Image (cartoon, rainbow, N blue to C red):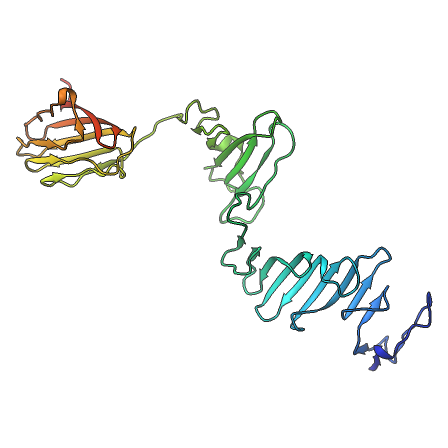
Length: 339
């Protein structure tokens, strides 16, 4: 193998060609030691500088005290660190960084060598894709729909599959204003067909949030702040029986309790104005249990109802929260099978 020192190779003159030949170059290799190589430039500032007549430059070199091999593409002169981008391999932290900016060494995207996880604007990556942005921004990522009316833009999801066309869920934006200001609705779609090749589509819509803030479940045209097409339910929460029974209205809207003695229904906690529901009050097998109420319970004429005393009987308090200190209620007594 022949070794040529590039510092000993001088250009013949402007517009001339320098031919480099070495023994065994066709069967072996030629090695250049020392200096830098320039193509289209007489003053390469990195190990290899390739410059076109119009100015853009491709350079190979190192970054950060020679520890990180790099490829840069930029404007200006060789060795410039402004207006460009490239690839930098961080040999200390085992990261591949895609850099770009007015300062070309500004890291934008990072790939971890160990697991392939990707970070955008962060090198501290703990997920398959992690994106960081200014805390004051909500457009961390923007997905655009096609111009005009009826366009769609969104994300589709699949699990246990790698073949395209088998996505079972989607979250997408649908333009609904005939292209005027490009406003629209946010839609959640979910396909429950077990066929592996059946892809989620717009006909699988489950929930829609309109641009006016209305929410529709199983309807594409919600007519109220919350519009449910079909049945809905609220869990019946069992209250703990004791001398004093205190409902926590943050746990539900509907409640039930079986009285094992004479009790007091205390003022409910965590109320929300406008909240409504029922409390089922059941006598135990002994019966004749009484129930006093707290001052926030407001019944017709200001009189608390007298419960049905038969063992196993059921009374119902229907309520609506008027304020933090007023729960308007009425009693439906002795609820039983109709004869």
